[in-house]
Image (cartoon, rainbow, N blue to C red; front, side, top):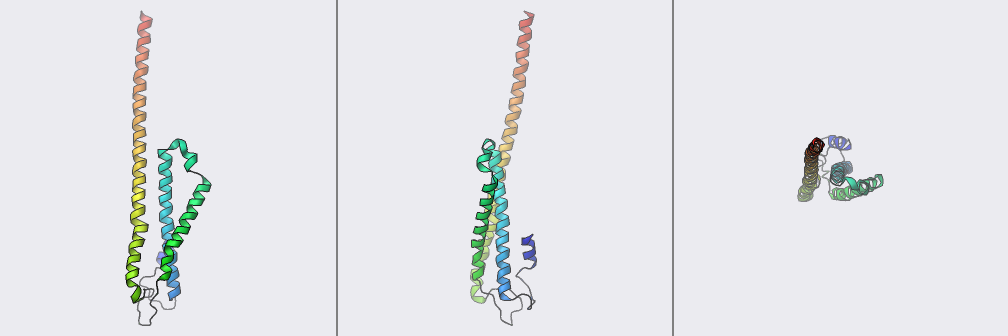
Amino acid sequence: TLVLVLKLLSFENKTSRAFYWPKMCIGLVFLSEVSLLLSVWTIVLITIERTLVVVYPLHIKKFVSASRARKLILVIAVCSTMLSARMLLIRIDASPNQRNRCQPAAEWQSYYRVNGAVTEFLTCFIPLFIVITGNCITLYTVRRAVFQRHEVLTNNTYAQKRQVETNETQLML
C-alpha cells in the first residue's frame, strides 16, 4: 500500500508550489523507490522459498524458519535503502519558471535517465527472471512428481493383480 500511496503523490507532473517543495520531492522519490524495491524483492524471496520447499521437501527445516525469514527481510530492507540512497543525490529544479514540480535540475537529467534504467532492471527484469525461473522449476517438479506417482500406482496395481493371479493358480493346483 505504501507503493500505491507514494505513487499517488508521485513526483511527476505536479504543479502545486505550496505542497511540492524540493526536499519533499526527494523524500517522496526516495520512499517510493525503497518501498517498490522492498515489495518486489520480498515477492522474489517468497518465490525462491516456495521453490526450495517443493524441490527439496525433506529439507524444509534447513530452508524455512521464522528467524531466517526475518533476517532475509532485514537484508532486503537494508539493501533497498542503500540502493535507493542514490535518489537523495539528485538536485531538484526549484526555479520559479519551472511549471512542473519535482523535476531534476538540467545538469542531473542524464544521471536521472541512467537511474531510471537501473531502477527498471532492479524492479522489473531481474526479479521477473527469478520469479519465472522459480515458478518453472516448481511446476516441472510438481509435474514430475505427479507422473512418478501415477507410474508407481499403475505399476503397483499391475504387480498386485499379477500376484493375486499367481496365488489363485497355485491354489487351483
